[in-house]
Length: 434
Image 1 (cartoon, rainbow, N blue to C red):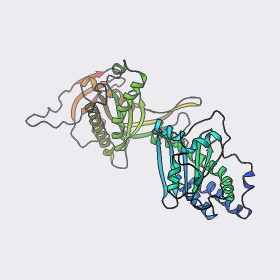
Image 2 (image 1 turned 60 degrees about the horizontal axis):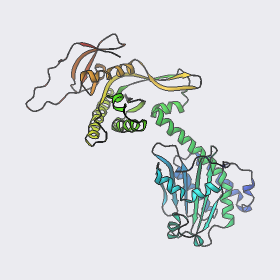
Image 3 (image 1 turned 180 degrees about the vertical axis):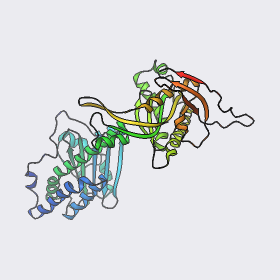
Image 4 (image 1 turned 30 degrees about the vertical axis):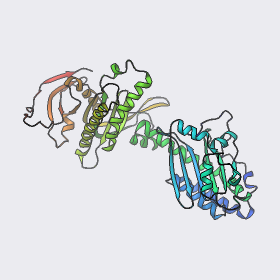
């Protein structure tokens, strides 16, 4: 929503030389310093940004700056939306609005007062009685709410991102010169605190997007040394799209990305609903784990199986609804064992990846899906944790492993009048190549 960068870069709002204190009423200077101290000590650590905006407005009112409405517009790094707006009013508290990526949000920004202050680098101070309704879309709303004076200030972060904050009052004589002086006095500190909070939030969010929930926590806690390994007992979920190469051979890169996104939209929600974590997207596939928790060793396997069946059902539904140009199928393999997070790479460029024998086994098991004509396969170590009665499909050699492994599929409810498959049908040893 908000514009990153500028043809004419502006200095960060947090830059201050002390002159911002010149016009603060002498008797209020100590109280205004207390507001800045609160932002730097408590405000920066508040759990919710909503509380920072509300707390600031309430403290400004205590020094007789008549703030009845305040809002912030913050540029953000997020896969689904480009900006976050927060609105505080004296009577309604704080609300949040998300601005999705797209032309509608971009157009709303270009027609807003934030665009004006970002272009000029100056504060916008409007006497609403003298401001035509068509100046900005928000003006009629402000007038209808009984507001008399409106201030919009640019908030420029150190890397150039342009954000903003507004204040409005219903006071009959609007904001006085001393009120504006107090706002200018606190603004550098407010900008610094907002940036600290946003940078921490963005780092947390971006890491979670690209490496997953638990790995991102490990990285932020300091697990960034090359060679560091963390072992996790879990159910391992490996899935990929069948015939991806053939399907995308005639597609543009944009069409192939759209195909993958719809495919993953069928798989990932099912995984996350059952407590699973997607650790890696592997081209046309993904790797997820379901951690063991406490003494409930069967919970991870049950969750993984439920997620796999729900994902396949979601894929079937997407095919029926025509979300794909041609039907798409998936192969899912489930195994239980040890996944290991490892920092691998060279120099300052590392990757937080998943390694280990059991991860490799799950990957090889997935290659059996096509050969056996089954969308969902489970290893013997996996079914050992299930209470269900899965159907055996024999023992199979997997490339790179010296011993055959038992392979199963979920039990199928027989149709009325049909016989159940004979236990052990399909026994024997087969080898699947790499």
